[in-house]
Length: 203
Image (cartoon, rainbow, N blue to C red; front, top):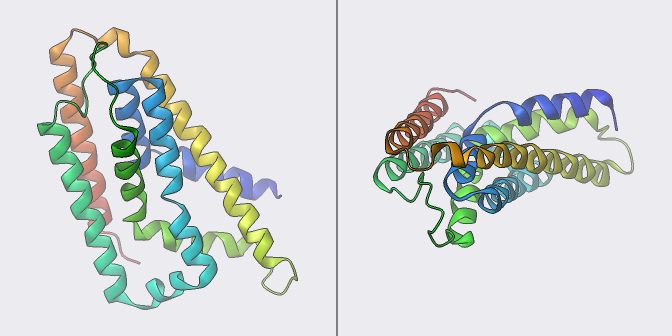
């Protein structure tokens, strides 16, 4: 395993994006358990992109402007929905120590969709993984699977760390409605900004 691959992976994973925003929101709203579940969900959302790369579907997205645009705008629409839900649904960002735990299924579905509806992730895998795998080598497929596994593990660990850190400051925002209102607006704005960024990015 090359140092270059590990460093590149850490930089990509640690850079704030939709998954990080979602995991932070989960940690602030429902604590450590929810943040870890959110991190797992975002990591799970990487699997389709990984499989698309290995099976060649990524090449289709890269070659077909229509396929790429359809998936891209589906992702934009979902990010805008997340922004709306964050503003309107106070359960999304709300610290209530006595509240029932948010459904793990709901957290996982949202987290998975955030990453599935991101065509740039497929293109990233398509451009990133082959740089560290020789197509001519006999173990190319197992090596690509191994590198993808390392990327997913790094994603889970980094996202979970973000979420746990966010959960650790929950007590500082409890019973402060203005702070929670500001947080909801900030996260909603982040989802809108990320959606706009995705909308204006080209292949």
